Length: 331
Image (cartoon, rainbow, N blue to C red; front, side, top):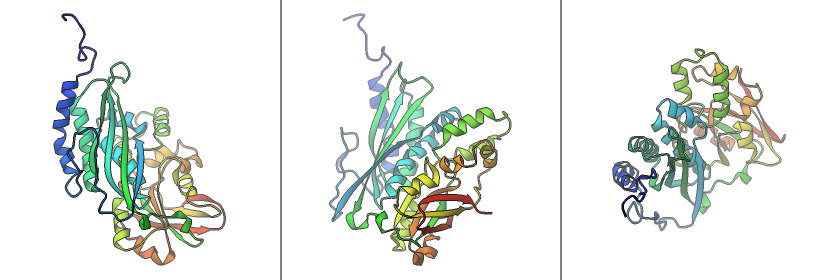
């Protein structure tokens, strides 16, 4: 009937959304070079054949980019947002000893913007291709009046699998085991509510564009470390992705009745001392990764080999009988 409203007039264009699925197929294809879905991409759900596993255990993770996203949008770093989205979930899967198999995304936007969405998915595909994880599907939700016009909402979901005997078991940690830390590439995607508050309090020209760009580098994928450990036939007692809560909170959840005193190298990130000058001296260790984005706990006999797994390995300390994790910067 003439004069009746259409969905497009209400701010949602389903035809444009359908076309977008075709536009991103090249990115999807990049993530299926070795692993492939069972059935076609673009159906209502994705399937993966687990028959190659003899004792499959499914592992799952979900996360977002957090308030770092505000600055990524402001500085037009959409590919970085996609990489952060993948890394925050894939790294969590890797801590279990599992392989990241499939990734799904949720993108909320006021009105469909093919360029923005394609760039985010391009960044996702870069990281997914690197760790052999399939972009299995997702959801793009047009929500005019709910999502502001200059905002993207991002959430990521990863599904992995491990052979049951290969699962990492933190109950095997013993006093004397060694904590090996691997360097981060940046502040990563946590602690940005504090960073943004500090930036507002700093003089406008204190942090240079180059320094801020270094802070905004994407979260590192630690599949290289995990793959090197597997290739070397080292099974860590535990692994931890260092996110919000820093080294203390992310490590303390792994053991009971034990603890560790850690010495970490100075954080080699351009301009980071300017930020830390605005942050409480104790709270910084409970907020940021402080230059260490991944920790593997290994037997003392495996230390030298573990240090060569991926770039940036450092001995941080040993497990002891005093509970809690205490961190200081190596002088």
